[in-house]
Length: 376
Image (cartoon, rainbow, N blue to C red):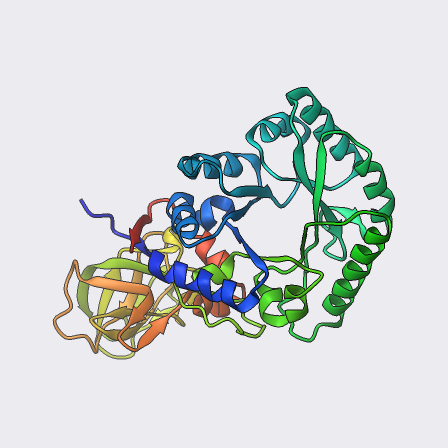
């Protein structure tokens, strides 16, 4: 049987997006962020397609993601690198050292544990200093960084090849805080050079900064990180300098079509009342499949090539839609929740705007019963 809800992943569009990003930041390298199982869409297909397109650097958040990515790309004889971009916990370090993952250094104590594990394993481990230049989440405070880096540099079996940071406000194109962050980080890199700490890899830009702060894709930076732009999505507030395209199409099917009389109320809370006899379709997807409650009485889907308004509150498994303008609609017909329909389209960004969030939230919310279907 076919699943009721599926998300189609267009790998050709994904590769086109990667190549557009790479061309935009050239000669910078591009690190593709595939954390959380490629935002819940399936890391294997993403990694293989991006590797075939020339990507050799991949970012993850935690160790099981790193191991899965290494397993997926293992046939390439490791001509790629996997980097943990967050933190590494003490019990995770030995396995990550053994696997050859590039590790973050968020403080001196962590660096010592990595060094000790590397000595025991008789390996040299690549590490990147994670600098907290204003995110306030993880890393070495910028004012403490030189002292910490001096001490880490003394530790055995560490290759201190990189330094990086992250921006909390890069989606605002003219944000003065971000401009200050970039300036402080660049000053830190220059100060480190005077101490004899020269880094092969220097990176700060994620997708937002690539679009809004082009200085983060120029020297002394050597690479950028991208995640959401690979999917063809953007933060709703910033510029869209990259001409990427949507990769995803979310589909379901019509469960039932009925002619309902005037005065009928729809859904939990009775939030919609029909003011005239109306043809209403119930579609086989709800908030358990990733349709945000914020689409209630405001969102649209495509049925029979037409935009159809969502009426009534979205429930866990079903959503009711006005199909008065769709002749001959019947149970089993295809519904495009987001994606292209002729020259029209609905995107995760559109849903994010209605929900007051961003596309990451929409994509990561696609439920476990949504079938991932790879195309291209």
